Length: 287
Image (tube, helix red, strand yellow):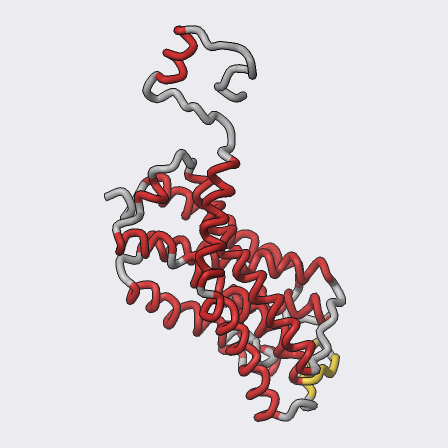
């Protein structure tokens, strides 16, 4: 219920005293105006440098497709679930979700709070009347928006390049695209809370995000790996995201879709709770 009086009705002295009393919230429900403003700020921030934040990762992802297709032969089939799939069509969905969507989502989310701490502008995130959940939602929403924009650009470029990428199970594309970008956005927020300098965020990118992305079955079918490497792939959360996203386009996958959905949902839930508790405690932000 809003604490403001109805239009045309004056407040009494007692009502004004209660509204202005310390500790009494003026905004008692969701601060939609503040949430929308911070979200727009995050989106405008990466659109201002779109050559770096949108077009650069899109071109890099397309180059991955071109180079690997030429190196291995564009018509070389890959066997997945007993089905032969052209190599370019096999790696394209994995490149879209891992390099084109999850990477930019992490980069965007890991930048905001860290730069605020470095430049001394962290107060711009802490001073507005936003709850912890509203702050987290705006940061994650901005990162996922960037991921969506880059993903659509990459998908369109691959279609123009001649790769057949028409969704077979559109729900799987939406579900694993959403859960995958949410996963990296939450990981980026956690990194942004922890990092005190650019080297910290770069370390997470170079030693965690990039290796997990490249060793997730994007360029190969894990069924062809030795048992030890196959077990490592199944312990990699990126594997379930890429496999499920590929299932949305090709109708076949390296892992059970239900298992992948449960695993990624559980990881996202744990990360969301962890980010919420860290933001609420003010760890490395308010002190």
